[in-house]
Image: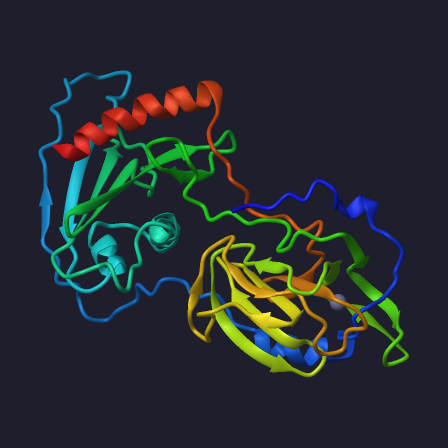
Length: 331
Ligand SMILES: [Zn+2]
């Protein structure tokens, strides 16, 4: 659930009434929190045992010029071990496999839901006139057990490939700006500030959001818990590895939500803990950090992937195309 506290915009930040003093340990803690996002592994030595079948492409009339339109083909592979193996056997490149893994990520748990014998189908437009093919399939269906999940390609005006569900919803994981409904920003992100607790100049690698003790703290994006527990300075803290290249830190919590454990996964909007003043805090607030490629960024201004639904004419074009592709996938 996204949060947009209308009465608590960063521009309305109040005066610095109290601060958190974890700047001095942040360097250490960030090192602990460094977890490079994993790209889906697709570099297996053993040849994937997948069966491949190809449906006949529609016959295109022969002509000399202009070059014939691309032939639309549907190809399927049976999952033997991993999604990545099956995708590779269909000729998909690493970056496309990563994009699709992310696209299916919200509906399919690739480790738990995917079973031997599940199928992956892709639709391509194969150029016939020597044009270069795009690597990205136009449509992809992943059938796990009795349920199937479809995503459809849409190129944005810059030609960037994106996958959407049939109703035009982006499959890219979204990020909320604020993890908590806060009363004010009690301390901004800064590269250098005077710390009243340790009496030293240091950077503040996050933002302090003042809120009463016990206010629920929500995960700003889906993620894996890389740390839950106590750390000097941070007090009770939760660290999440979010969709690459992001990771987030929630500190000074009074307590953790039930079921939050190391290695577990959380959904966007899920309550993970409650505001407190544990660690080096001089008042109740949430100390929140956003790291991009392990570099601390200002959480209030950092670029975040949003819910980019298709709208208007774009949406209509997409819907028409998705309908015909979906019929093709049904065979
Ligand atoms: Zn802070």
